[in-house]
Image (cartoon, rainbow, N blue to C red):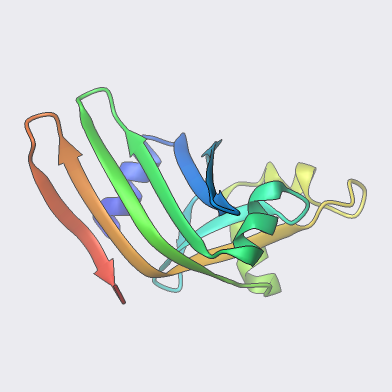
Length: 135
């Protein structure tokens, strides 16, 4: 998990894919954190991505660096509506408080990967497993 989190931190824009019906939906994300030994994402509960996860918990995340290396993470998510998880997210990225508060009416949803497979690849065709839990 440490190597995965380091790669995500070094390449903070990653692409988060959900499923809507039978179609993939991909969007850029910029927040991930490790909390309680799990990979967490923060998503506004008003957003389509959150609603898609309520219907289908399968996700895939991908990011790359300028050296021709990339990481692909796949699995399913569970929801964590605890105040502790939200407060941890606000501590990691304080600017989230500007977007998710009583004034805006937006609520921050927290999801974590409960089945996860993360692999690292490069242009030479090398690959290695970074994390494999519950798959």
